[in-house]
Structure formats: C-alpha cells, structure tokens
Image (tube, rainbow, N blue to C red; front, top):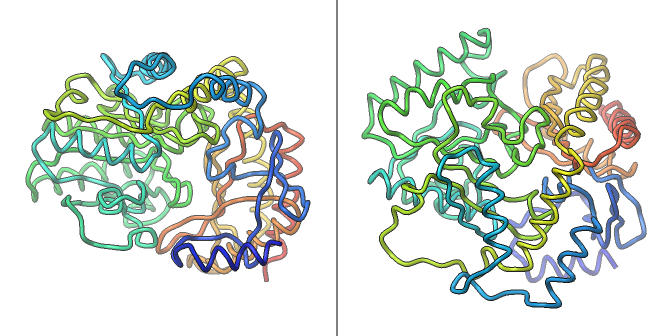
Length: 428
C-alpha cells in the first residue's frame, strides 16, 4: 500500500516536495509520544511533525475542544466577531512580554513571518532587512528572500534587500574560536560596520535557535546586544519563535528571553506547536506597529473558530501541566545522555540545544567537514529501530534534529536515546 501511495504522490505532487526515507512511510495515527504507520509499525516520535505536535498526539483535551467546536461552527472568517480568537489573542498578548500588544492570526509560520515583514517595512518605510546566516523563515516569496540557507532558498529574486549578519552559529565561522563575550563583541562590531554601508534597515529578523539550520544558536545575550545597536537607529527586532516558542527550550517560554536584557522584541512571530497539529500561526507586535497599515485586510482562515478552540485547549494544557518545566528536566537528561555517547564517537562533532530542542552535528571523522550521508544513514537506521527524528543544517552543517512532544517522559527519553545511540554507532 505504501508503494502504491508513493507512486500516486510522485505522479501528482511537485518533485521538490521533500520526503524522508528511501521508502517513505505513511503515518496513520498517534497517541501520546508514539505514532503508527500504514504497515502497523509503531514509532517513538522525536520530531512531532516538525515541532508541531507540541503536547501529545491525540491529546484528549484538544480532541474534545475541536470536536465540540466543529459541532457548533467551524469557520466564519475575520469579517465577524469571533470569541475563541479574541480569547486566545488575549492570552498570547499577555504571555508575549510585548507592551500594548496586538495579535494577528495566520495559518502558518511562513505567513506569520510574511506579515511581520509587511509590518516592519511599512512602519519603517524601508525594504532593507537584516537576517542571520544559516537562517530559515518559510517558503513564501518574501520569506525565501530573507532565508540565509541555500538549501531552502530556490530563488535570489525578492521584494526585499537582505543583508546577512554573523552570529547565528556559535561554533562555525570566523568568530568560532572566540570566547562567548568576545564572540558577541565581534558580531556587534560586524553589525555596526554593516549598518554603515547600507540604507537604514526596517528590521532584523532572527530565530533565537535556528531550526532548519540544525538547532544552532548564539551565546545568550547576542540579540540583546544587537537590539541595543538597532534601537539607537529605530531598527525593529523581529523574533521568529515559530520553533522556539511555548516553552520548548525549557529555560524560557520564548526563545527571545535568553536575549531579553534590553527588553522584548518589537515583533514576535509564532506557529507550529500552539495548535498541536492544527494550522495556527500569528504575529504579536506593539499597537503602533500592528496598526501602521493604511489599507483594509482580513484573514479568511487565520483565527478560524476550530483552530482557535484547539489553541486554547492546548495552551491551557501546556501551562497547567508545566510542560516547559518538563522540557527543562527531561531535555536536560536527554542532552547529557547524548553527550556521553557523543564523547565516544568520532563522527559526532557536537550535541547542542536546550530543553527538548536538541541538535546532534555529524562530521567526517578526523575533519570538520559536514557528513550529510551519515545524517541520512542515522535517520534511516533510527526509523528501522522505531524512532522518528529530523535532520537539518546548512552548507557546512549536517545535524540530526530532536524535538519530541513536551510531555515526553524520562523513560521515553532513555528509550529514544538508546535507539539513537545504536544508530549513531552503526555509521561506517
């Protein structure tokens, strides 16, 4: 059946639509931290539909909320008052840390970042955007234009002029040998020099932890130092929290809080985990920025009642069960377990991350060269042994991405670590 479906997939869908595995699998159902494929195989899910199933598969509270809402009304658009949308916006505004916050809902992280770029460029009357090398912000025309990762950027055409800044990758690049304080200082010097060579930018957009790039990140405080420089010039800071938000990093509810010494970002984007699989994205911004558009706008599907019901139930479960704290505790155990394994394996360059957002970077033994074949082999072997993980990286980074639902238990973390250890040891 999987082979038949694969043939139909290839006949009707784009060639560039990526699929994992030499023999792609069809996931048919899930429960908790596990999923099953069409052949009846059971997997421990350490990727959660690309960090989207944030709490658990088939979470009863979310399933019940969606079912009850579907029995009333599924959709009406933003042309009408929508109680669940207002309620979720109120909660997100309070949690965002942004003063006088306004919230606009979209259907994806791509659309959220696209909206943030529209707001920033309109507010600042500039189409110059600062972005980070090795970054990823979505697949729309404008989001591709600011993505600093060649593997996910199919065109150089863009409505924006994008300039790329150092700092998103701590252990690679010209400043890798510096200590953390010196690293930040060098990146700030580079930013200041860059600003002297261009017209005033609209904004800097940055992922606190780069997702597709392989879960890389700068030292804590880098974006705070950037913000100080940018704020002097009126340049906005957009925090792309599509993958880092909602407590995934354990230490913080938002990734920007590791860089919050000079206040919150001007604009925050979110998506993925808040819907636990339902299609929710959004933007939070100060009222003066959010309200700067001088034309009418709506969102046909952003904020629709059924997705808002899911988001409300999911957020309530996350907060009531302290899943951020669980990510910190269980994620800490998992990171240390994997670091102990990595110390024995010459092809593991680094185990990095925080909370339940963990990257395992692979290289050719004895070199600093990224080993993309090894990452693909580990992905395959882990699946064969019952574990689903992700992969990512840039032109010189090859990393496994580990991001289970935040309700992961310590026993499941150990089970997954054992499977991953075996897969890593199988590399030849």
